[in-house]
Picture 1 (cartoon, helix red, strand yellow):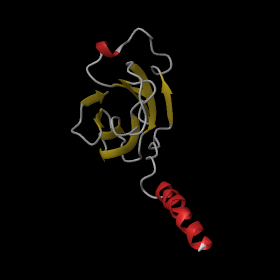
Picture 2 (cartoon, helix red, strand yellow):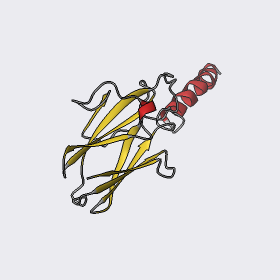
Picture 3 (cartoon, rainbow, N blue to C red):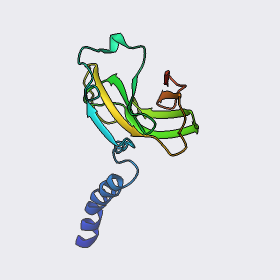
Length: 148
């Protein structure tokens, strides 16, 4: 009788442990595919540019033909995360970011700060001018920028 009572008392503990190890555990924050990420504007760029000055992300050549920087604005504690870089063709690059869905279990700051991702271009993106489209959370592109 005593061993049956002990087994019954252990069931809730076993169930909670199994639940914690299952898919009900908090979702992990996605990993960025950028070569570098940092809060702020690209290195060497003036600090006097704000989100109000831009109609979309700031996209610039780092090393023409091989790497770019993309600056987005949003929560400094929960910046948009670059999850995909796709060469559509030699002159078109499609960037996919997760923003609202990247931090499902985290409270994010309500500030509006720049965050920069540096990206090495895929081998398939070799042409200039280069058109860069930027999408967030799987929606239609919010911005399309042409780099000469």
